[in-house]
Image 1 (cartoon, rainbow, N blue to C red):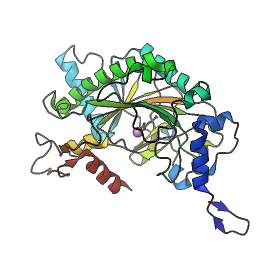
Image 2: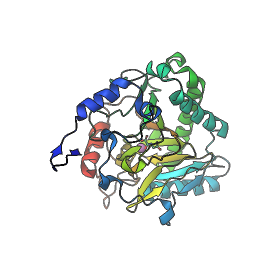
Image 3: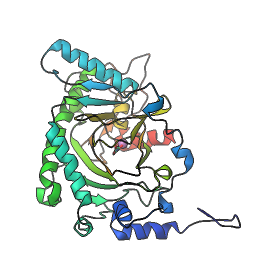
Length: 357
Ligand code: OGA
Ligand code: NI
């Protein structure tokens, strides 16, 4: 909205602005490269969305930290780690994991690879740009929901699907090809370990969640949040929950991710070598709300670009016709009846989204 001097509200030509942005095929990074000092109206978020920028500085809360070292060394240690995972998933829906088995060098190279992609020559990037139909395995775009959302967010993204089969390496941008393949393989393996721990944390057979196809596919996204001249007016990611079962997030050391905990926004502060793990809507449904899918968002800053890689775990096909309901063993009891009927994951996610707005 633009307020004229006479006080009459005039709709700015939003559609034209969106189209021009889309047609530029240069993303948010392109705006910053062009030297803008004010952000375009399409990125300005209503203030009520941005309030309560509390952060950890003013809160006693910290996102739980779980050290996975020794999960296969001793039964006692494994049981202790499983307790920590359970507590984090029940109370926070989020935790940071260290000693997860992915070497620090792979994490660093992955961040560098994704940054390298986004910071390479715009002309080269444009080759991958704007797969708005998302039919291809590898897509490069800014704001996947550009046309549906009321406000755009301050980020660009490179995404690749690993299922039903991984992309041919040549489909990936040359600048990050090798590390993307390597990281995807390692994160998939970590996901399997995490679903084993989560199954045990729920009192289920170790393979129960994997057997439900929770770790079947990863859909990773390499985000790039350019520095922003007016960071107080926009967001890198709106408050949202993740729709799939679980997300493994690799972030660089810049910071900006916040988790909503007891109605306060808490920083998920970067820690060298750590990965952020969070429960998604689909896991909340099948655990009958025992594990929580919690809202989170990303703030942007004036100075540094930020890079993150979110790998969501889900079923092979999405949408899929497979039906899901809360797991009966140990999660559904007389005192704790099922909170969801049997339905597709898409229907469950839509229901939860509807409840949250
Ligand atoms: C996401 C997400 C956070 C980040 O991709 O769903 O919440 O820090 N990303 O990039
Ligand atoms: Ni998310």
